[in-house]
Length: 347
Image 1 (tube, rainbow, N blue to C red):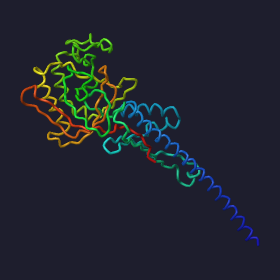
Image 2 (cartoon, rainbow, N blue to C red):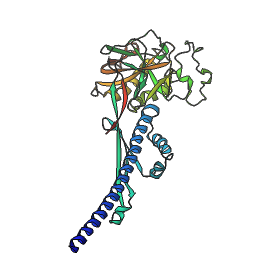
Image 3 (cartoon, helix red, strand yellow):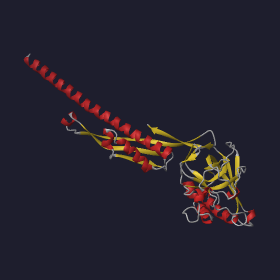
Image 4 (cartoon, rainbow, N blue to C red):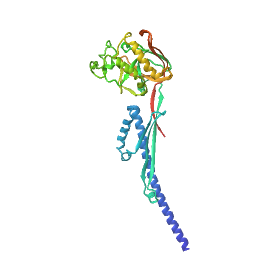
């Protein structure tokens, strides 16, 4: 009888101890779980912040990381892991992805430590996709990769053919709806806006008085400028340089290349030769890269860029020999839906 009572007491003590240990270890588990979810919030916020900065502000991954790291130090946990979080950018896969991870974070334990487990290793990661989706219009005020050409603004209809011919900027006229003109980005001087000396700039606000042969980037002879532009056509196209129009202005300077004024007799043949070589770098020497899509800048009646229209180049027709007056460059295109970027957190 006494032995049975002692056995029951020992069993009760064992069960009580087991419950204490179980409750304590559950507490450790809950702390670890809470820490995991707090770390997950950090990585989730990281990929969303990085993606939004890259898409909406500036295509600079280093600056995006710097901005978020500055945000991290505003919280105790963020300040603790600021040197433990790593970012991975993938601009090759489709869709593009941005990942953030925190590996082997040590979550100390109390009760588990008594059982020989001093800490939990927590591994947390998040990923955001940057997808490209179609708009219901061919025009947009945002482009994630502009082409080095401009056309005059007009009514564009998705599915319509839009064949455009290269024309001298010196002969720019807003009523010419089927011509395209050379455009450069990141221009470093207002004189790059010059279309011709017969164009009235008095109401456009361009500082044409600063243009001179002695100022870097402000040459007025223009031949070397055009040759340099033609050589960089593929670089401009493949750079995927983003551009955003806000209140009629762009985050990236856009200039209609017009300092090389010329005329059909003195400059046309040279321009056709250089420009056709540059276009071949994009479409392929025999058009093998076609069809391909690109965003083309649209110009308002004041010759200022006001947006983009998206086209699919389906063919081309070049004549680069014979008399200068008979040479031409024609791009055969179809109007297609404009694109926009959408950020999606992967769960």
